[in-house]
Length: 258
Length: 86
Image (cartoon, rainbow over all chains, first blue to last red; front, side, top):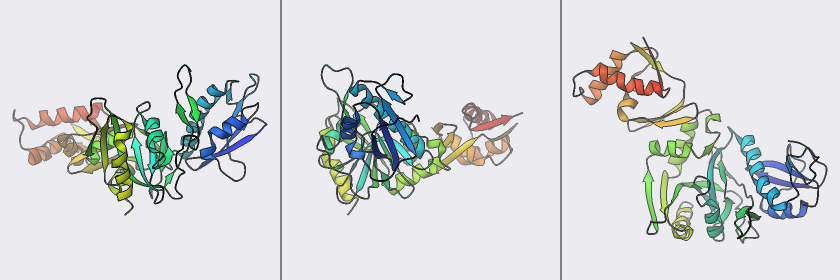
């Protein structure tokens, strides 16, 4: 990624240290939006550069803060998952955790099917791990990706980005650990919440479509199956509204740490 | 005719059903296809695979195990799971 001289916002995404190097006036709002992912420590090996100067060689060039924040999320996600390819299993998922035990549920769902809404709605009772990617290693340790959350404002073309703290979401527990995997299907005709178990062999093709860089692992399906079977197997949750999920998810992460 | 395994990255079998990964594609095989794949060890005669399927599932309605086996293997071959030769 191109380097840009200026303020640096140091973040961590999926355990990957990344520096956001900024020229222009956007350092403060970018730091605010990414405040849920800030890290201490020295310079990162990976840098994403942002500039409002059209003549610069920055990775992201715009003088519109909303546009920058929107594309910055995508860029950081791309950099982080590429850095973790073959190291972490990474679901397209929202992650919510028991705030004390760290028992984490990965809510797997394709883009645009409610992950952010669920994170915003339930992340005030369960800790916010991510609304985009849940990454975990072979020991099921979860590496949070506490990115800003996109919120649609009426009359705006680009969603605005808000830090988890700004939305009142709970901080990540110190040792989040994968405790359950749920595949979400939003269905407006559903009476409330319907949960069913999915056999491992049926779950693998479903999850493979929502896993980044799966083929970069040495034994991708074996690792996925191990993770599923260690966490009670895949659950399919058909739901109407995010609130329908809360009692069940709270019980799921609560029960798994007892 | 001979058959061998294709470029399978990984496979998981539970209760007689196998999921395979070929390239970036992940597929759940039918019990019949799973059994056929399990019987392929190196370069294998299709008749050997057919005999194994008959032993496990019984003779096909038309009484032609080779035709049934070839149909299964051709589907697997189209998906890159096996390679047919000859």
